[in-house]
Length: 369
Image (cartoon, rainbow, N blue to C red; front, side, top):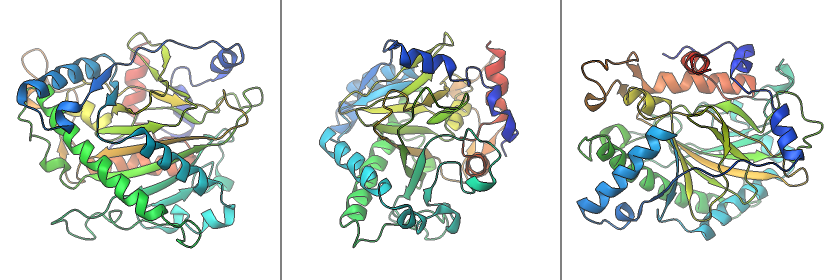
């Protein structure tokens, strides 16, 4: 089980206050791009081991340095990303009454729509909740998978097909493509850690996958609350995240030098970041970096991002990998079970309207200052 921090302690994260960021936007100051681009073609095209090892070496450097990278030549076109993002705008721009029919508070596995402020924004004491709506969709059952073991899988809430014809069919196929890419990326990450390529196959055969639309409504940076973001500083919870962005941008990460840097949209690529459980697997060698997002630069246009959160099978025991420990480098983290770890952080997020943050994340962040 993960120890989540108290709901009112999230502001302990350095630079949660957004005043400097808002000033930078208003003065049109931007950080430089330093995120590497990984050519995933050898895995997409089924090339030989030498080509796959080149990918693995590039991945290792990126994951050690920042835990973030762009993934190119993965098999999904920019045209398909554009359609996916457009479907998100169509969904969120429906009347609120239509979205409330899919409220995730009414779903046993928390699939569906959530408004700004969390599942119960009226009772939320945090008046600076993240300025975003979300809509969560699951993957379909895989061959051989037991129905009901993961209550989210194959059990989503979908818009009325009479209102949004084609939405479910497109997203079901799109999610399946992302899941296949994620499973190939697990193989490349295993190779990057000097493990057999199939090392993570079993833990990700039936992964806890969710595709989440993030809808950031227009925000005026001059009137935003002091600690108000589109999504406030956090790390992701599972193995890694495959994110597509629209053209507006707004994502930032915290780098090794403890500076916030931009991750601008790069057409045809995913932004991939290592998440908490994979950082634990690697004994902290691969970074689960803080990141945040705003819509301050576009006060008249809504922004869409579309992450696929990749999580190991719920009963997976996550403990230090054999290639990430040794004399003078003992395991830093207690073993955890994937399902309870992620659920605790998700429940905190639903309650507060901000991402859940593990106590260890805050403690490690404070040590680096």
